[in-house]
Amino acid sequence: MKLIGWGLFAALLATPALAQNPRYQPDPEWRAPAEAQGRENPLAARPELAAGGRKLFIRNCVECHGRDGAGMEKKHSADLQLSSVQQQSDGTLFWKITNGNAKCGMPSFSKLPELQRWQIVLYIRTLKP
Amino acid sequence: MIATQLHLMKNFHLAILLPLLLQLPSAAQESPFFVTYTHHMEEPGNLDLEFSTTNGLPRSGQRAYVAPYLELEYGVTARWTSELYLEGQSTSGDSAVFTGWRWENRYKLLGREHWINPVLYLEYEDLNEASRIQKEIEGGGPDLTSPNALLSPTRDHELESKLILSSDYHDWNISENFILAKNFSQSEGIEFGYAFGVSRPLGTLASGRDCHFCRENFSLGAEVYGGLGSTLDFGLHDTAHYFAPVLSWAVSDNSTLRLSPGVGLTHETNPVLIRLGYTYEIQDFTQRVAKLFGRRP
Image (cartoon, rainbow over the protein chains, first blue to last red):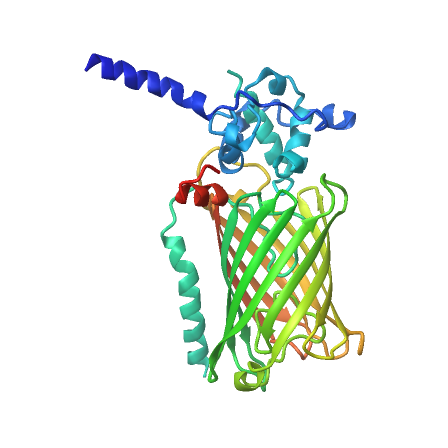
């Protein structure tokens, strides 16, 4: 019985790993222009708005990036927890959300109001492992 | 007469509203427009099921009608969206008829966001003359006075193209559609039309709680659309034009309700054109179907 319990616990721990995309390779051509990279998040001083960003993330991003933002191998989507993503500036992340990358299947989310896209950036910052 | 019209509309609207009652709390950010297209495409792999009606209130010599249509919108890639329409029409004191189908494709020309984002639109239509959904108006507009028995035997095979120009400016969307249509079944020349729309979400910040009636779930706007005659008779003479406020409400994470009470601006229109639409988005449709057949997507 104890063995089954440990087995279930191990399976539970392994579940998020199955959803991750350890093979994620960033597209070297998908780069924000310098001007966009330098943009600051107008909501940076209001971290409480990350809660709204979480809601937007669930609505728009979870489908490909997973609930924990770790990406999905079958979707070839980015692991947003990776330091290579987290090191990117707020402006870069905002630009990527706005423009998407059609070549890799990432849609543009310019249909969301600008402040909501910044809220998503706020939330992505909370995904650091 | 009025009672029959109201009964007719009530039945169709119940069909739209019923699924709402079955929704779980949970916002698809759909454009509020019925006629004007923006550059925002369907997300790849997602399928939108949309059930809408166009309801015409009559002026003298016309009859009230309800023209329902089912729209299946699929995101083929991040820049290519394909849609299939099935449509019908029921006229008060006349009959109900199936009016045909349409297959449209939209392709976003530029991969990134610009001041003006152009989209090419190409549609094949196999309709009859009784079609009244008025997804666009080209030429002079539809015949709103002749009975279905006279209109429905005449089939139209039509190719329609649009140049969609759309801009997002400070949370406002401003879109312009320029229409060219060629009916291969009749000698009507090439017909022209237009649609312009402006919309904005009511709330630009998302609240942290789940809510149905938050401002962020609503978008308001207005569109104006009409026909511009054809190569045989170009201009505003004898053409239909409408002005229509639009409202969309993201009822849940994957469903949107839209309403548009339009006003006819010329004698060739219905004085009031009420549009109602319900969209349900199935995320990851391709993968779901692949799973259903036991295949690895």
